Image (cartoon, rainbow, N blue to C red; front, side, top):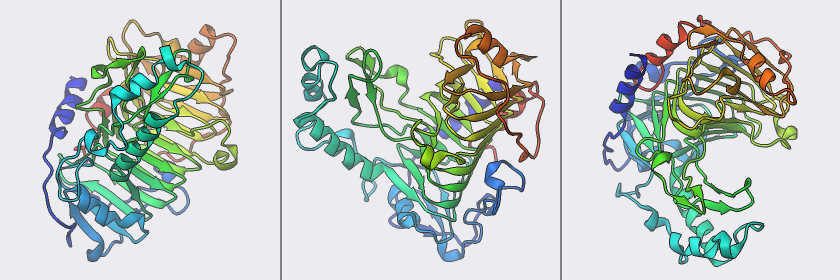
Length: 434
């Protein structure tokens, strides 16, 4: 019943049609959620000045948009004027300024083609020790830049972006909250931010990998960000449907939500992260201490993470409070881990619920990525409180993680019993549930 409840929301949100209008329409009377602010004490984003987004926006900076061109105009290059942007329907990032659809072929330039790229960098002839270089790699980069100019949109300070009703979303877009402060993103379905031009890296791992750009949502050097009641999904382009080249999946997706480059004071609450590989990355390099030390403070609570392969989250440096989330590993899915204890991380995982099939043991929930300690308490597996860290340490005696992250979260408005979390979260998280 719980999964059916979540599936109903996904079905309702995917496939909404875009509406073509020439300019962003001002909305003098925004809906109540558009003026909402983060409650006091609700996670790291409530710290200090709190997070109010564009709640004080005047009528001239309150918009209802339904096309990519309107959204870009309302964002105004990421300026800091308080603004409310209400999304109506689903906005497709791969459209031109007249609202006409764009395909990967429309971005390709300088003679790029996938067939030519594959022929040029086949490991059988190119080898495995050197990154691609030459005409086809240059053409791939130029083509990728053309797509990036269309699908990446900057979000400035003092902005609220909120979906109208139960059927609002962003398709194939990468929202970039970069070096901004005080941003709210709510009630949207983020679907399929796909890269037309993945790069082959024969040096990535033992057999090489395809690497792509574009996360659904990136928090980059930004502060006081509230991400609430959104759904993140690969949707109509699941990884399982993608081909294999050079023995590796042709990966066109990056992350669903990345918080990186000194970002700080973020609360992600009541979101649904679904059917994705590398999902939540908090800190993108072990060598980023100069920018990330003392930052990357993130709260994750009451989120549904279903069908996720790994990084839910993977943490470096930051004090991350993950509580009351529901992790659902679906039978037959690829699964690596959920909680990644990375370099100098201080991860607290408490009162979460894990629904695991018989093929996945509790010892697989945590992964060691040079993290030396984490707090893990009162988490339940299939309805029974389970010592996840003890299970990990017993199975990994050479990489033991200590049981104290070195800090105690205080910014919590409610903590539910982990046995109640599946019902609460599955029928409360995601877009359309405000």
